[in-house]
Image 1 (cartoon, rainbow, N blue to C red):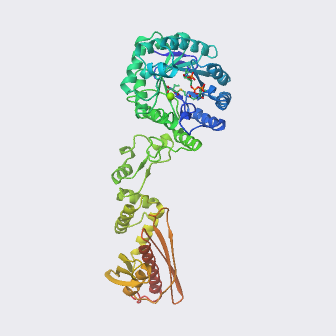
Image 2 (tube, rainbow, N blue to C red):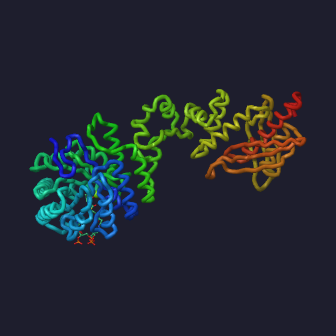
Image 3 (cartoon, rainbow, N blue to C red):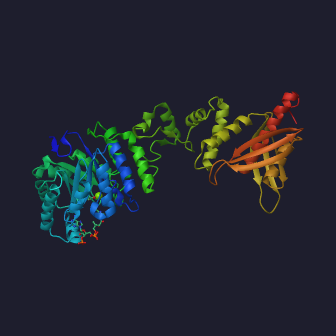
Length: 524
Ligand SMILES: CC(=O)SCCNC(=O)CCNC(=O)[C@H](O)C(C)(C)COP(=O)(O)OP(=O)(O)OC[C@H]1O[C@@H](n2cnc3c(N)ncnc32)[C@H](O)[C@@H]1OP(=O)(O)O
Ligand SMILES: CC(C)C(=O)C(=O)O
Ligand SMILES: [Mg+2]
């Protein structure tokens, strides 16, 4: 069965109309109000994305919303432009009609509650009055445009016979799209499928209109309910970018679209969305509203294509399909990211080193650097590229005459600091325990005791490589010997270990200089 629709013409059986309500229901999220300029920017981006209908606002709500809908209708071309109106509101339909009038394809979307709870306590109307308003509202809307949508607010909690009567009345009065919202996100996928199956079986004319789903996410079921509705014959789905909307939000457009795209085998429906635009539109909305999506948000969250665990990273490096069901490029990301952290393994570490220009490290150096990386990652939430560079530079340097093994420190306000230092000097392990005026002085004294030398300490400076109290310290030590000046660098989460590494680095450089001039004079 294919439907002839006033705005879309003959609609193929598998075609799904994407109705975006980011600018109306999405804007109803507390704190998400948008001004005219912001709404217009979003509407242009939604049109470029390929949505079929933009619900631009609720024109009777305020002059600002009226102006926004009117401007979007005037300027944005491509999608149908829709304004919301209460079925029984006094000026709602006239205001909505005026706001969308200049659109190439205008739609009026009118709604009224049909559930016993809403009719009795909110509208304070008898069901027969509501039924009468359904007829009056849709007739009134049809006087302005051929494209009229009617929604049964709280439809999922509406008594089935009454819902069928209301839907029939709306169709007879001229509605061309019938939307059954799960307004409070109460339904299960089976409930929504049963409602649409019932309407198709029982309501005369249901096969001549587009049935539509509008699901809220109070139980986290909005996308599942939308997909179940599609399978039960719905051909319009109402959704928002990033899933924003009243309370816990609406079904997320990007999630539905990518479910359809990724699971064409089970969901053989078509739409016009240019999926590589998804991330850009999501980010635009976050910037405009000031609300970022959570990192683990499907499709557009910053972790959606990020992998931290070693086993996954190894799989990703061998074949990305092992852990990704769609490509990051297909939704607008440039690539997947392998995040190095305490769960990472050698494969990802080696890959990162190659990307940072350290592809030539031998197995021993790689293993040693990896061990230090793991120990750093145990202490640090985020290991940045700069951390890895610092750590590998140290490792390369440590394969020299003097090699750092370990350092234990005892310091405080009551007694002089002590350092127990173990070094590998020309391949032989040696250790010593010394005191000093503070932990750095004690550590430097220990170096001098293990490897006596005449070099003088000229400069010692410390800075943090990255942010946070768990950041690595990068230390520079400058030594001078017989007019020769060398700088050494060290990095470690512990400042004194970092300083000790920097001192050893400088000493190693001095030894290299000495060896160039006096090849016999490597030892102290
Ligand atoms: C499920 C949804 O998302 S529905 C859309 C919700 N969105 C909004 O409400 C945003 C825009 N709303 C507004 O700006 C205002 O609520 C307005 C302009 C629509 C109405 O403002 P007010 O006239 O001050 O009414 P108020 O908001 O206090 O109450 C809503 C009134 O609409 C009535 N109402 C609600 N739905 C309908 C309807 N479909 N048909 C007729 N009346 C309705 C309520 O019963 C109530 O009537 P009452 O004042 O006689 O008790
Ligand atoms: C106005 C209607 C469609 C709505 O947003 C709802 O019922 O959730
Ligand atoms: Mg809603």
